[in-house]
Length: 247
Image 1 (cartoon, rainbow, N blue to C red):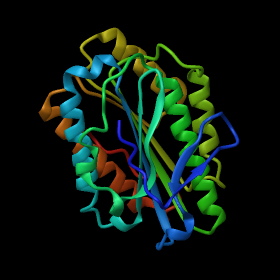
Image 2 (cartoon, rainbow, N blue to C red):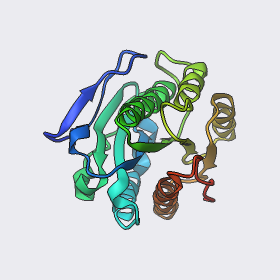
Image 3 (tube, helix red, strand yellow):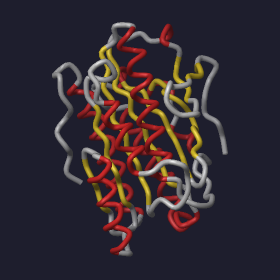
Image 4 (tube, helix red, strand yellow):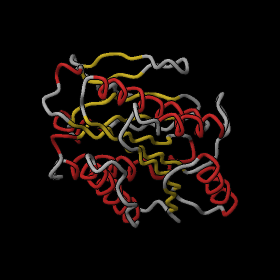
């Protein structure tokens, strides 16, 4: 799978956990405030039947965000996961993101390390946010975790995700954090029930359930994600998060 970084990306290691993430160099930033958007996508074996539609949705999210009035104040990080959590690219200025670069970014893998992917992605957003705040930037964040199944591998539990969300809410980290768990292709009621419980127990801001993974549904998902990113960015400076968008 491609690694969509750049020469201006720098590596970071949060004080919690044994993972690293990357982000554009702070000295390369031209605005005074940013919204950090993280998109976390399940690529376990069960998504194989709709991986093309998911790729199209990802490309449309990036493309639609470019029309946001806050486009110059957005950074996007893309994470994929099966039994491993992989950063496709770190926090990258939206203006440097090319939708065509995502053509082969999603390649189907194995099991589902959902909790590891969620916890580390939230922690990375909080850690980079803290660094930016320390340099007198105004920063908020939004994290989308998109999955079609339940956790079945990895080292973290629900408590690890809950702790990551709690830590990210500290004032010195981010002005606000919106976290959205998105359950795709929920044909099995037991899976939907378990993911709803995960949403509540971990403390996600919002839960969205998609009954199928058709091209039409995932196109609607792309619209929902891009509008949610834009809304959270427009809330920056208000002292609180944006209102939840309706799917």
